[in-house]
View 1 (cartoon, rainbow, N blue to C red):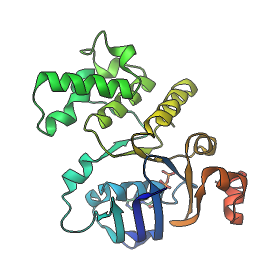
View 2 (view 1 turned 30 degrees about the vertical axis):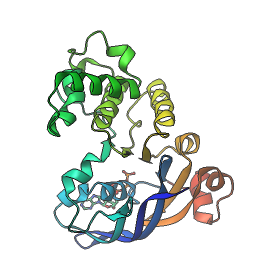
View 3 (view 1 turned 90 degrees about the horizontal axis):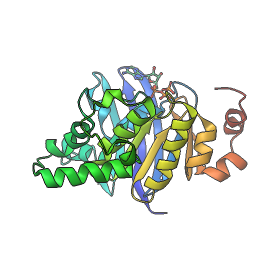
View 4 (view 1 turned 90 degrees about the vertical axis):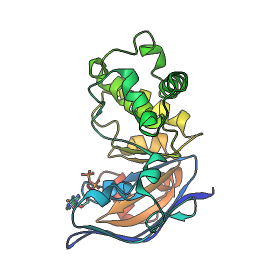
Amino acid sequence: MQPFIEMNKLNLYYGEFHALKDVSVQIPERAITAFIGPSGCGKSTLLRTLNRMNDRIPGARVEGRVAIGGIDIYSGEVHVESLRKKIGMVFQQPNPFPKSIYDNVSFGPKQHGIRGKKKLDELVEQSLRSAVLWDEVKDDLRRPALSLSGGQQQRLCIARALAVEPDILLMDEATSALDPISTFKIEELTHELKDRYTIVMVTHNMQQAARVSQQTVFFLNGEVIEHDATRQLFANPVDSRTQDYISGRFG
Ligand SMILES: Nc1ncnc2c1ncn2[C@@H]1O[C@H](COP(=O)(O)OP(=O)(O)OP(=O)(O)O)[C@@H](O)[C@H]1O
């Protein structure tokens, strides 16, 4: 598979604390890559380097290279807002705005200057369909987003992320606050989305990584210990620390 995201000798410091150490990872286009590892090993930090969200953290400093589609996103030429338009992100807790379903999904496109009602209606429908939420909400798009169930709210957040037509979808523990049925729906959804988007997901749930991803990266203390095709990494890990982690000996 062709690498779409390439991290090369990436180091990240929070002040004195060295959170990511010489991370070199290649992420293929239009597939799901899972980051696994025990709490505090740097998974979310690494995810946030991809849309430069760490820029907002005072004292955070990045060294090394992160290229998306061959372009170094930390070079002076890259405009952070246009980078973020290409990258949607979904968090652990569903975080819809306290507005209607329609206003949540149309928010991003409006921010990017799309005004025509017809175009916005189309984007809202298309995004809600992609997030497999359309049939449940199409009769009342003016309903407050916060009146939806947690699982529906998370699919709404996915629709909101997709509405700006990104290339990449980042999911940071996106199902860990959800019940098993909602989790299953989102896993099924990611399976469909992977044909159109490059998905990078952080998960604590190894079964989930094994079920949905094609590539898995195992981290420990800010370092990549092992990166392989998911089947290979779970069936035949090379490093004894990966073996210990996936067999539940720590973490
Ligand atoms: N804003 C911050 N300032 C200082 N240190 C931070 C900050 N964010 C994270 N860290 C530290 O960096 C390390 C990596 O944190 P990170 O949240 O990336 O880990 P994680 O693997 O995603 O953990 P979890 O699975 O618990 O979410 C941890 O030691 C954490 O305490």
